[in-house]
Length: 298
Image (cartoon, rainbow, N blue to C red; front, side, top):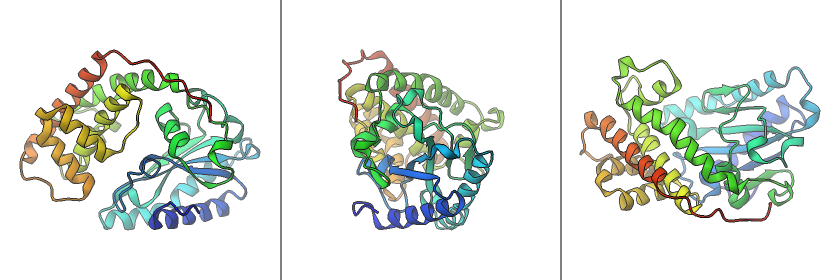
């Protein structure tokens, strides 16, 4: 296990890969860390542990592959339960996308993911994180925890697809999410968006952080090509969108594990969050895209 991994991350990944070797013997032949850890923005007990795992091709034709991957996901439940009890949420366990050995060198937008799991959710056919943003993290800061170094994976992050992908994500995911926030919770359709923006305890600080800092990160990447962590995205939003400072401070406090500001009040969070998302998207999409930098294939 690489020495640059935080101790709690190294422990979690070791446990995860031990479970994988028991459930899929010889199945995971390579694995690397992306996300906040790759960006140098990891916060113990608050950040996710994001992995890209490569499945040996011999497993692709096995009818029990998905069942085994489900079992691997279920092996995370004890950590998830303990983490939730300690207020850590999904940061206590590994979130993984699975791709096939023979697909590693394909352009990222052409890779058909085998499956993925995030927190309590298992997706038997998709993986949102198989995208140009995650692959850029993988190429520039990914940490190998099994198999060959990432430099030898022959990864194609498709840098020319990065900005078009972000623009589409802002239109197709974040714009509808902002619209959902404008709807009374009881009238919001029963979708993943509803589960995100509503909860038994109301609109949470965690949801504010997700909704405000996500578009802020996208806006920064769209403008500069740089991928940043959540805290840096919050600082960027404070500078670029000072009119949304009150709700951005709520998001930053959540990310930092600090005391949540008393103002604005909780009843204002939903509307202020929707306004922040809308302004960030409008600003990001109306600005002309700078030239796409060319970079050699990793």
